[in-house]
Length: 169
Image (cartoon, rainbow, N blue to C red; front, side, top):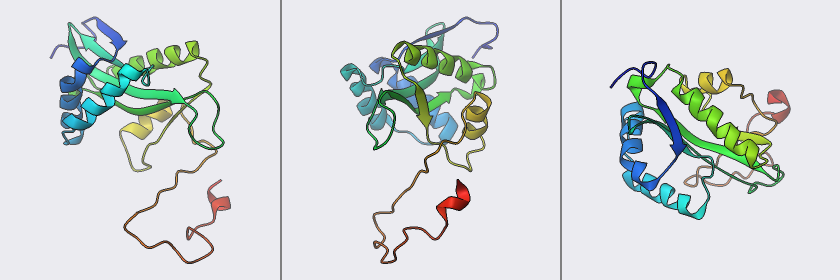
């Protein structure tokens, strides 16, 4: 693959035909191959769900992607919010501004749609994505991400967690 600095990077809307390139990028970065997942997700694109989702390409070859959507689904969340579900860049093009260019384009698309806030979920231990999102201006929000393991019993205690919410706010 050629250097992104010497080639013209084109950012365009994501299409179903991009699935194989996206699957390859994700497999190279994460070691997982989710062909069916991506086919299903990009079919949703036809419904207009992924309005800000894009790919970055050089000479017709997809080298990166950003997938997200807009809407207000969660209780107490803003009416017109954006989400970044995932972002990925081929390893040969990482640290060359591709992810930043994808996000900048994504942000501009969402501004045109009157999206006020963009959210994403990143693991505190993700030493690749967390620094990237911090670098482009994301900060911890005023909500906490909670999870529930469906295989475990529901706690019988009054508190759902063994920590004090006030401590982390």
